[in-house]
Length: 148
Image (cartoon, rainbow, N blue to C red; front, side, top):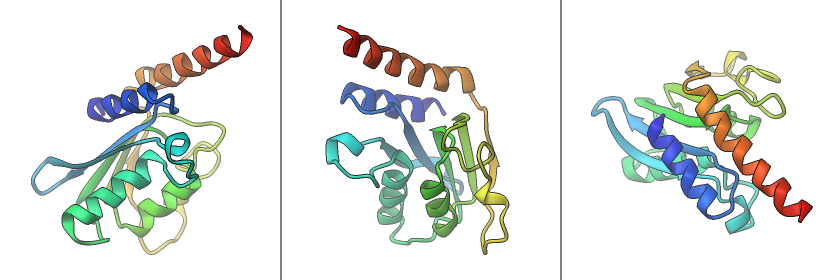
């Protein structure tokens, strides 16, 4: 999760919402991909941290099936990212902060509990306060800039 937080800081340095993700190959215990939010930079609604990391991992493993992989992400995945996680067959998801506005792994809904053909294991709230603080600080700075 700490490496995902470093990726989130990369997003913040680009004035992006600080969300970071890393994918670990469970067989080697090595990080094989990382991503961070790039929606503003790329002007692309699909440029979420998880999707960028999933794409990198698929390229690295030369497979869309990431069944022996774990995803670590600083914020609970949204519906789009949860769907991509299911479709890429990621085995395990660990996330930091809960997302009461868009979270789809327990906050608003839980796509991982629906009867899809794949159900990742998951755990939320890991380093929750630290991951949430990244977002709180970022949005506080944005609000301050708009007040000036």
